[in-house]
Length: 298
Image (cartoon, rainbow, N blue to C red; front, side, top):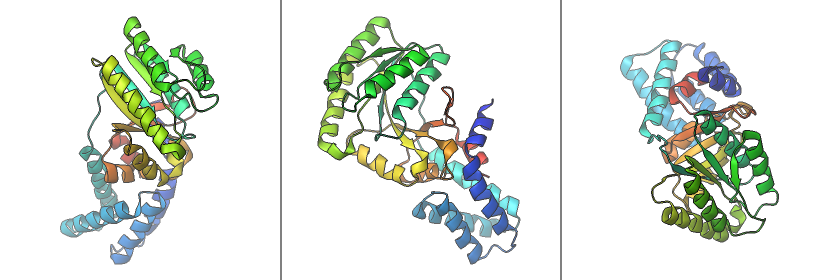
């Protein structure tokens, strides 16, 4: 199945919610203030966010006025163009090797599953992958990651529950260097209710990676659950206090009508969406493509 088809299918709930309302709105004819107010409401209901929705619609209103646009298809075309520009404004990430990818995010967003899918993705690209079970706080975190390691036939470095996460990462780096691993993927704890402990742990992990593996390219990705909508923004803010986030992995895009949150993220944080989860299968993690995402919305 092609990427566009996968993203298109994953966005079906979001697209149905937006397109039905937008087509109904456009069928009324005149592009007056009421039309643009209603369009703002449609975007907000798809979790584009209040401020982002208002800014997008204000920009669209100006473009339609300047170009004297009256047709519904032309309105859609201009709206797509505006949205695509937001993604162009965000930095781009090209993963280089060898690399260490540190995965952060709150519990329950699908971090462990995402790491397993990432392992599969990189192995499909003929890269050697090692997983590091750095979440030593949550019960069963290591065993769940081990299941994904078995499933994807990937090496895993783990210690006992309650061990020092930085020590696990140290061993993971030593192993990766010895085995000439291309991609080292580090799981971390997501216990935001103990922020001080989390901050100190992430700082230690970051220090170990920089000290022990200076030649590696380093990326920190936050995993967000699409179905949480605007709560995803507060999670970025919370982790941004502790770490420099390089990019976003958005899970469960296929299970929500709130896919518009991606637009809100781009508007507020200018962080690139690197991967999106488009299904439950091990192969259902795709590199994000802004053009295909926007085209899949309408």
